[in-house]
Image 1 (spheres, rainbow, N blue to C red):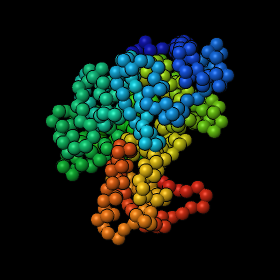
Image 2 (image 1 turned 45 degrees about the horizontal axis):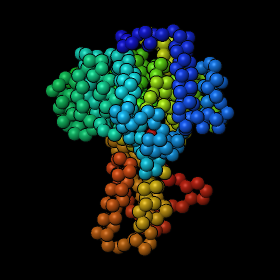
Image 3 (image 1 turned 45 degrees about the vertical axis):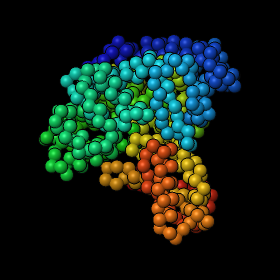
Image 4 (image 1 turned 30 degrees about the vertical axis):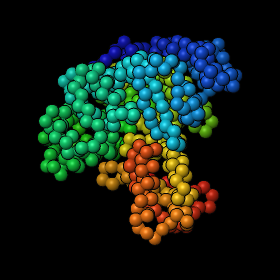
Length: 432
C-alpha cells in the first residue's frame, strides 16, 4: 500500500534528476538571498554555477550544530517572521536550545513524509494510533499526530506518563498502534502485567512505532515476543523537522523520502563521501525546507546507505539502523542531553566545584541519570537541611535546562576521582 506511489515508486534516475533540480534551486536562492550561506560558500570558494550535477553537492560546505547555536534564536531563518507558523525547541549543548521554525509548507512536507511512512507500515483509517511521545516543544508528539490524521487514522494524544490510564485507554478504545520510545513501551508492558492485563490477549494493540532513543534488534525481539506487537523503527531530528521516516513492512532499512531529504554518508574524520554499505556519518540536505533550510548538515548519527531494491516496491533510498554517534550526546528518555550542557548549568551555581560525574543506567525499562557533584569547601555543610536545599536547587536548575528530571548526589570536596589526561565524566551502563 502506497500513499504517494508516483514519488515513492519513481525510477531512481528520475528521482536523482528531481533532487538535482531541487538542489540547484536551493543553492541559487540561498547564495543570492541568505548572508550566512553566501558567506559560507564564498569561504569554501564555491559558486552555484559549480553545481552541475547531483554529485557536486560534495563541493558545498558542511553545516554544523554550532551554526545553530551561534545564530540563535532566529538568525538562520530565511523567511519573514509573519510566515512562521510554529516553533519547536530541542536541547542544545549549553543553556541555549536549538530553535526550529516552520512555515505552513514546512509542516505540510513533514506531514506528507509521515503519511508515506505510516502507510508503508499499514497504518490507515481502520487504526487508532496512541501517541505516547511528548507533546509541546519536543517534535515527536505533534509530528506523529498530524501524520496519522493525514492518513485517516484516529489519534489518541496521551503524551507521556499516566501509564495505567494509558493501558486502560488501549483497552477501552481498541487502540491498534502506539508511537513512543522503546523503553516506555517496555515499561508499559511491565505495568500492564502488574495490572493483570495481557497486551496480546486483552487488547487490539499490534503495531509500535519506536524511536527517539537508541534501541537494538534484541530489544525489538524482546518487545515482540513479550507483547505480541510488531515494532518499527522511526527516525528524524528536530533540525530536519522531526520524526519523519520509518521502516516499511519489510523492515529492511528506514526509507527516506528522497524528494524531501537528500542523504550522504561521509567519513567522520576526513569528510570524504562513502559508498553504499559503508558505515559513516550521515549528512542531510533538506531540499524543501523554507523557514530554516539545511544544506549538508552533519547530523552526527552513524549509519550506512542502502541502494538495493526493497521488496515493498519503493525506490526511495534507505538507511540502516543508527549504530552510534560521532559526538558525546546522550539520549535520555527521548531528550538530547550533552555533558557540556550539564557542565554549563553546574558552573552557573556558585556553590558547585569543578568536578562532576554523570551516571546513566536503565532501571527496569526507563532511563535514569544521576549526577554526582562536588561542592566547594566553603559551601559544604554538616547541616543536613542546608545540603537538602542545595541539592533541590541544583536539580531544579538542571531540569530547567535539560528538560528532564535528574537525581543529584552531593559529594564532599576531593571525593570524586581525578584523571590523568582526559577526564571520564560519563558512565553509561545501558548497553552493557
